[in-house]
Image 1 (spheres, rainbow, N blue to C red):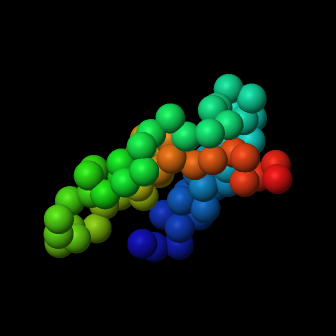
Image 2 (spheres, rainbow, N blue to C red):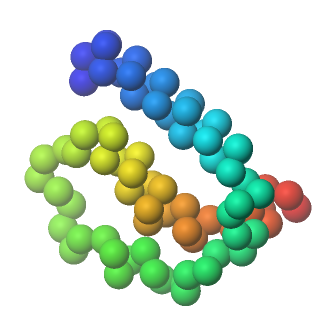
Length: 75
């Protein structure tokens, strides 16, 4: 990743966090997934080639965020 890509990724990450904060009221306080859901979605082997950072952020939103508890943030 060159410096230009790094800057784009950093800005996209900040946008991701800002969008998350903006959508807190629309998110479930408690996860609507079962414990262990994520392990079923993960590949058995690590990828041989890295993914683009855009795909990583999409995966965070699609796969990880459904298991996040907002209760932790407000306790």
